Amino acid sequence: MRNLLKHIPFFAAAGVLLVTSLRADEWDKRTVVTIDQAIEVPGQVLQPGTYVFKLLNSPSDRHIVQVYDKDEKHLITTVLAIPNYRIQVTGHTQMSFWESQAGTPTALRAWFYPGDNYGQEFAYPPAQAAKIAASSRQPVVTTAANTSEYATAAVTSTPAAETTEPAPAPPAPPAEPAPAPPAPEQAAPPPPTETQPEQAPPPQAPPAAAAAPEAAPVAPPAELPHTASTTPLIGLIGIFAMIGAAATLIAPLRSR
Image (cartoon, rainbow, N blue to C red; front, side, top):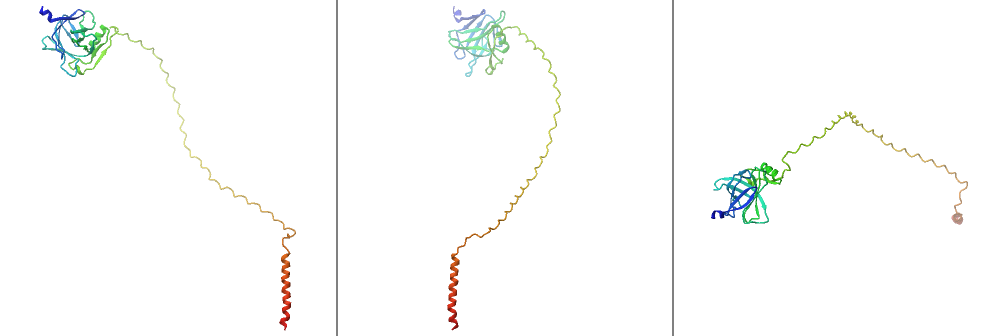
């Protein structure tokens, strides 16, 4: 009875029976898992048996999962994961699987620790992710690295393939007629030679203005104009008369 209480079945998918130990640590999420069929994890296939899942002891990255053997003496694989959110929290470990083809190991998709909303969704190598996507017809998280250095690997998503058969090659486009050879180009005319511009003749001085025609002589008037007055002449005669009179009076006086 005590042995039965130590293990609790918590998930079954595609005929895989998983049991987990009640002992687990909060920091590294240590969980003991027992499987009765082979399951596929990134880069590995876990045969039926008991394994230990826990997080890498890294305070900076809480999404690196390590898988050990039962005694934790041999590290089987280190897996890069991404956060996977669940709405309903359970008190036991939960693991989900990808849908797979009959006769092939079921691929492990995500692992949730008891009481956690966020779990670990595993990233598969490209070739393995493409195979899982073709079977499940859903996008599968993938990583370019397949070594223990998963902390620096880039994570992408591989879309699900619509069919496993290769897509037919597109029909070849109809051959287009070869373009006619271009007509030979005519020789371009030689560039015009530069000619010196003709110099304009120096401007000639404007001809001297023609001499003005001489004015015709004006004929003298027949009579002088009567412009003088007789008043001065009368005065002049009076003066001479007075002189003559004076001379007449003085002559006798000299003779005495």
